[in-house]
Image (cartoon, rainbow, N blue to C red; front, side):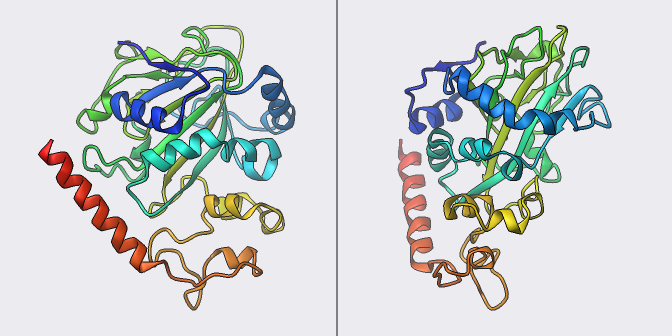
Amino acid sequence: MRLKHLTNSASGEQVSEALTSDGAVIVDSVLSSRQVDEIMTELRPWIEHTRPGFDSFSGRNTRRTGALIARSPRCRELVMHPLPLATCGRFLGHATSYQVHLTQVISIGPGEPAQQIHRDQWAFDFFTFPEGYEVQCNTLWAMSEFTGRNGATRVIPGSHRFDDKLRFAEADTIPAEMSKGSVLFYSGSVYHGGGANHSDETRTGINITYNLSWLRQEENQYLAVPPEIAKTLPVELLRLMGYQLGAYALGYVGDTQDPIQVVRPDIKSFGLGYVEGTIEKLRRQRNESWEHKRE
């Protein structure tokens, strides 16, 4: 049992295929050491003022620093990085759209024990989604080396096909060991957890996750990013943050107004979604499902 590694020339289609097959995959050296250092320079003051977790799951010696879109221009670039977006376009393409689910620096300090093994999609009130219906695509960017000793995230490859609400021990998992600047992609349905940090260094990763737009976000982007900052952001990023319709009629404002117009009134929009396009997408998915069954 091992985690597959792809080179930084991998396409979103290749990453999506690996996620479908194994539930998790590492893409090596996506960021240079210089890029990582520049990101950490922006984030370090915020991390230093973040309090450790309040329970064993969040980690009493782990700092979780959020609101990265508001706090770090370089993290905005990570959110909009072409590889995760291309991957989400394939992996979450069965829905009308997807959005940012959360942005968070996870800094696991020395002495932190292993986190409980879990599925991230349990955040949706422990609802059991149908097997094979993925609602979440996660990235964990290595801002430091990830090793089995310093708390590398531990994963059970293939567990996205397991039954829901199972219990596992750390011994059932393997560490997602990767170099600084690499990124772990994993589905919301794969069983995983933060590893125990037996070293004298802090393991730091940036967790940026995406979910289907008809589900609630774990991090409330409308409050995490103040309006005065939101108004300065690119339209593509605003829509990814949730300033878009989650489906034909999900998330409109007032008299069926497109939410993007709240922060960017100059943007022309027709309000409710494109119903003909929605119907065509459902028809295409139905045909693909029939083709799959024939195979």
